[in-house]
Structures are given as structure tokens and as C-alpha cells.
Length: 407
Ligand code: SF4
Image (cartoon, rainbow, N blue to C red):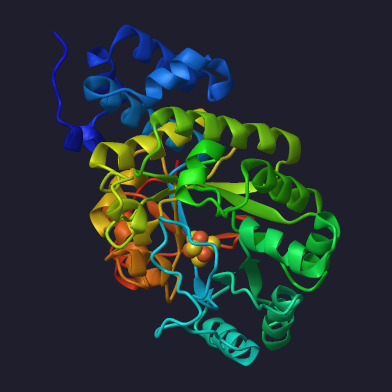
């Protein structure tokens, strides 16, 4: 008889431990995914079954995802040293899941000047950052070329800084403000210093759900159009999914399939980032429209499912540490993920919604967290084209018995 294990035991289990207790259908699908290392070998019924699994099947999914992660991207866990710069919290869009935005007359609004943005970028560079991540609210009276002007201000101050900036919603707003064609607008931003785009504002890419989450937000077709056009202009992006609110596992499966499709056309995605819904201070939760954020099972399942369903397409799965606590982010890294994201230096959006993971994780903290789970820490650049293994001084000098294996 197969042994029974509890959910929290999954990091200690091998595939041979977990597989016997799984149902034949789930076990068969996962065995094929492990053998082929490409989710193209799974049919739709199997994808939906994996997204809905529980108990021993969920344990098998988590262990299979970790096994596949090791086979596909090895034992390195990457992070980027960056600074988050949310240049304003004034926004007219009114997303119900957002606790960050403010109306223009509220007392605690702010708007950083171009000089402030340049100064913050310079400070970040001097502290070792290689990337600034710039997003903000959408104020009604924004000067038409303001996003371009932010890029110029930052690049003038620090020409080598990688600028990862502007959600697809901000891009659509910039197009509206300037009257330019989308491709021309993105090319203009690229030529003024835009390096990569955050694939945020995706939330759930289903127009019915979006209508409830935020009826003023860009449509699914607009999100796809911005991302495809950016990739065609040579601007790579991340892709994201917000989970743990009012969506179902079927939305996860369809969204991951959409990302695979876009990736097969453009090759422009650098990583997938599942973003757990932080419910506390949001209208969506207060109006009874959402559950209380993701459960432990959901946190683990979305990272594992992403590793399995994106295999052969998108190689990097990131944990969003600002929305998870330290222990949970380590567990998700053992359920298929391989990237810790950015140090951030300051992060306002999740904190306003009620997350308590802090505003900054130092490179040394990342290194310790990664070593604690027996993996290798490495600093990367935004596009993952440069990795540098980083070990805290005490680990590097303590001898090989403490060193994890590089697969
Ligand atoms: S998520 Fe972005 S667009 Fe939506 S309300 Fe918040 S700041 Fe505005």
C-alpha cells in the first residue's frame, strides 16, 4: 500500500515516494511531462485535472514540478538587484483589488518629479542595483510624453541602468495621450531607454472576470496587443497572473496556455510571475467579491502548475516574495520556481494592500534564504543573460560540505 504523506512533507519527497499514492490519471500525465519535458504532451483534460488536483495528487504535482525544475534549469536560484519606483499613487482607473491608488484630492497622494526619479535611480546604482522597475498610477492630467520623459531623466542620470517600466495599461494610456500608433509609441519609448516591460495589468486574462475586477482596465485583446507589439519591437517582458481572489483553476490553465501561444510566436517572455492576491485593504474583498487570498495549497499549486504547463516554453518561474512570507517563498521555490525576483529597495503596492513581507530583501538575505533550501544563489540581470553565483562570505569559506550541488 502507498504511504500517506502530509502537504508540508513535499520538499523531503522524491518522485518515487510521491508517485505510488497518486491516482493513475494524474500519475500518468506527470510521468509523461517529466519524460518529455514539454507540456505539449498533455491534453486539455489532463491540464485541467492537474489544476484541480488535491491530496496525494497535489503532492505528486509538487514533487514532479520540483523534479522538472531541476532537470530544466538546475539548482541555481536567481535574483536581480533592483529598485522599485512607483512614481505616483494618483489613479483614475479604480481597480477593486488595488489598495495603492488614491484619488487626486486625497490627503496622502504623492507624485515624484523627474529630478526625484533621476536621483533615486542614481542612489540605486550606487548601492549596486542594475535595474529600476518603474510603474505608477494613472493620473488624469499626465503630460502626453511623461513616460518618455521619465526614461530620459533616468538614462541621463545613469546610462547603464536597465529600465524595466510601464505596465500594458500605462502603455495604452500613453498611446491615448499622444495619439501615436502603438508600435510607434513603443519604438519611441525603446529609443528613449525602455529596456523591458513588466507584464503586469494581466490579473486574470478573461474579460468577464476583468469586468468585475476593474471595468476601466484594458481588455484581454489590448493586453495581448501591447505585449505582442512590444516583443516585435525588441522589448521583452514578463507575464503575470493574479490568483486567490474570484478566479478558478480553469482560468489559470487558459492563461498559461495563452502565454505559451504568445511565447511560440514571439519568444519575448523572460519569466512567469504568479502574484498572490493580498486581500486585506481591497474593495474586492470588502464587497464580498473575493476570497481571503490564496490558501497554502493554491500558492504551491500555481507555481508547480506553471512549471509543468510552461515546460518547453517559458523557463523561469518567479516567486513574488513581497506577497509571500519568507517560509512560503522558500516552499514555492521547492515547488517548481527558480527565481526570487528583485531586492526592490522600496515597494509600496503590496504593502498598501496589507502584505507584511517588508519593502526590501538584501542580496545577502536572498543568498541565505536560497542556501537554506540547498540551492545556489546567483545574481542575474533582467533578461537572465548574465548570471553570477553569489555566496555569503561565511558560506564561501566554510568548506565544500555545506555547498549545494549544481545540477
Ligand atoms: S492597479 Fe494600477 S491601474 Fe488599477 S487602480 Fe491600482 S494603480 Fe490604478
